[in-house]
Every structure is written in C-alpha cells, then in structure tokens.
Image (cartoon, rainbow, N blue to C red; front, side, top):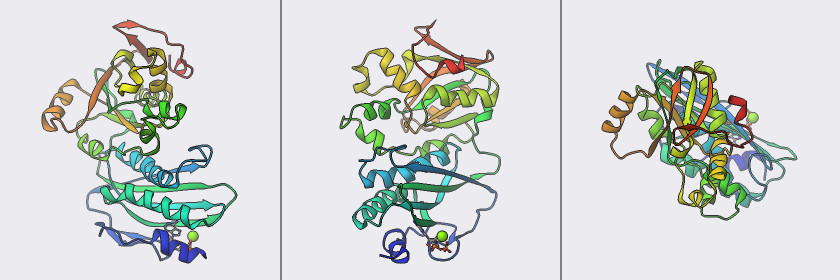
Length: 308
Ligand code: ADP
Ligand code: MG
C-alpha cells in the first residue's frame, strides 16, 4: 500500500462539518477560519512505543490515547478543541494495525467534534506518533499556570493515581483509566472565568502542581488524606496510594485553583455535573507542604522532595 492510499483509507474520513475547517486532509496544508475575538491555542505531544506506552498496548488504545493526551492539553487551557494534525512514523504498513489505530483516534475526536485536518506519514524503525491539537479561547480567557493566588483552593477532577496503579497491575479493573483517558474538555471550558490557574496532571500531582506554584510564585498546602481515590486504591497501604497520586502520572485529570467564593458559584452553576475535590490551598510560603489530618507529614516518596 502506498502512502497516498494509506492516508486515503485510514485518515481521510468524512467528519462532522467542523465549524471553521475550510479545507482538511489532501492539500499541501489545511485551511481554518479563526472565529472572531478568539485566540488560537495550540499544542503538540509525541508518543513513542515502549517509552510512552507498553509495546503490547492494543492499537485502538494507542490511537485513542494519542488524541486524548493532546485534547487534555487544550482542555487544560480552558479552550474549545477544534482540529488535530497527526504525524505517524511507522516501522511497517500493517493494515490491521492502522485500521484499529485510526478507529481509536477518531472515536476520541468525534464526541468533541474535533476534525483531523492533516498530518504526515513516514517510515522509521520505531513507532512514534506526534499529534498537534488546536483550539480556541475567547481573547484573554485562557487559564494559565501563572495565575494562582494566595488563598485559592486547589481542586482536582475525578480520581487520581488510577493510571499509575494500572501500569503496575496489568489487566486490573483500572486498565481503562490507563489506556483510555478521557480529556476533561467540558470542565476546562466551564472553568473559564472561575479558575485562576489550571493544568492537566500528566506527570504526577506533586510535579504538576509544582509547575503552577513555580509559575505563580506561590506555595501550597496539600492534604494527602483528602485526595480522591478509586475504591481499588483504597485497598492499598495509604503511603502507596499517595505515591501513585503524587508521582504516578498519566492521570489526565485537571488540577486548578480558584477562590472559595468562585468555587461556591461554580458548584451552584454546574450542580452535579462534575466530580471535584478540594485537596489544598495556595499560600504565600514557597514550596509544597504535605499535611495529613492537619499535621505536616513527610512521605517517603521519591520525586516530591524536589518541591520542599
Ligand atoms: P506533502 O508531501 O505535501 O507533505 P503528504 O503526502 O505528506 O503531502 O500529505 C498529503 C496530505 O495528507 C496532506 O494534506 C497531509 O496533511 C495529509 N496527511 C498525511 N499523513 C496524514 C496522516 N497520518 N493523518 C492525516 N492526514 C495526513
Ligand atoms: Mg508531508
């Protein structure tokens, strides 16, 4: 199969008439009409086989995840995703693999009406997948890492540590959480005008929250006993569960900060729509202070000390 028929068969799908996409796959480049008064939000991420996912990951899950991690970055800015570009380096043309990969990729994009508008396909000894995602946010309303304010509450979506658990316990109940992360786009968009700072948790909460603290020149108190966990993680030793949450990674949940008043307003406006947990507060004192039952605690967890 040559490159052109490969692209035609697997990646040039009829897609939702995605607002603003004037020209998609097939020309030298795509054409997109920017919505008025909006800023372009654009991000790229590469997944390398054996490094970012185990070699035996099903291709459908690889396709999904390649799209999801990029949509998660767009969500973490409070932006509405619109389109993606996909650069594939393949060791060989395996049609069954490509069919499953592209099915997974499109299944992640479709509910969010994100169009695949272009990409590149090459051969290389290692399988590697680079995705560029773009979206839009009303001018000045992107939720950045540098906006956290002293007195803000720190909030996370859903549960954390699931993917880290699944990585170390193959075929567990939480395998889906590792292979099929769900980008929190609706939450990210809803938080415009509420959150002062935000990011998606991809490298473990301690390190990622550290990015907000550094960018905002503030510190934080984090209550480890308030972290939200799935039932499976509650069967573990507490130290182990905290280690997964703080240093595990691959969660793709949102972590954001906002004032207590704003959080109350948010709960009122979006009653019951999102699962959110307050896990700490932003303070003036630099660094990340971990607390258990209101007392400072030192955990024997590699990685977090960096932020003391
Ligand atoms: P060029 O040589 O001009 O870069 P290509 O042969 O690389 O053209 O690509 C032809 C068209 O197919 C372009 O519109 C490109 O964006 C698209 N394309 C190539 N690979 C992919 C892919 N993996 N997914 C989606 N679109 C792709
Ligand atoms: Mg090309």
